Length: 401
Image 1: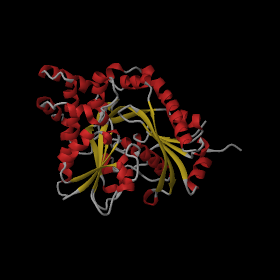
Image 2: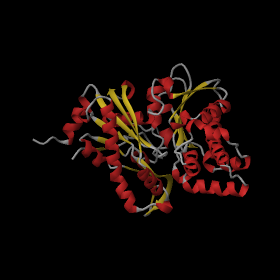
Image 3: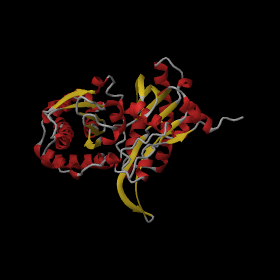
Image 4: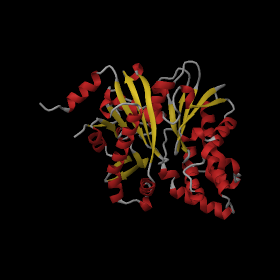
């Protein structure tokens, strides 16, 4: 008798522990992050062990196609269709590599949690066909990935929250609060990827009490400038930013972006801080006579720091002290870390390693956890974070063909 989807789900739910891979590729479009976890329980009874973490760089061709199709002017429906399937193959290879490095087999993996690659995020309501909607698009075919690896995949984590009136982002705060809230200290978990996002966790915080939002650009503008002027993917250690001078008028223009004045819930992506915004920045820089690439990088890095510190100061001003824990690619940028220490004098600034995890692995871990929470029937959206009417079950399931 054929095995049914119900048989698969029943087997997964009733196991005392599960091996789950979380797959994350963010707005930096630099690599596919895979975290391999051993997971027990769910919700407040969740426990996990990180078995392996790997990063698989995107090929230059794929990276360029993703960048092009994340912009309205250069997107192509054929490319988007092809990328949707191609990324599943890229993710499958990345998972195989991670599992092999852990000394395991793909057959040992019980479940995959796949975020997908965001091409467009439109959280503000607009009218289409007589309906007021908001929408988001993460490509990477769940059914293709499930079939390539013969492992069930939970994917499309954001759509359910948006159907409930939320912004579908940020979603990582649920995991942040579940795993890293403290009874001893106030904590802020800051992830600096292409977009920077924060989870504000008061002492003793439960997941539903977290405050979280995207602060604005993280590495996005700096990375784009590094590719344009230096032929490098990022500013390693923040060395280029530290060598330049911040131009005050250019920084003033950056600080006037209306996104920074919005109150949470709010989320951002390339539609706000991508190629069009960068071109406006470069046009203004030329008008102001700012031509030194290092100065352009320094000023772009400074808006990342200033936007984060200004928004965090407003929300932590009643705290005598708090612990700021930085993860993502920006955790390796000394310019960012020094700026955060200067701008938040009541914060003790560390990287995610103080939590006992690789600071680069945190978001991939989060999507493994979110896949587990879907499986266990736990609602993982936080309405006060996303703006949804109620908590929702996040994700869709793909069973191998």
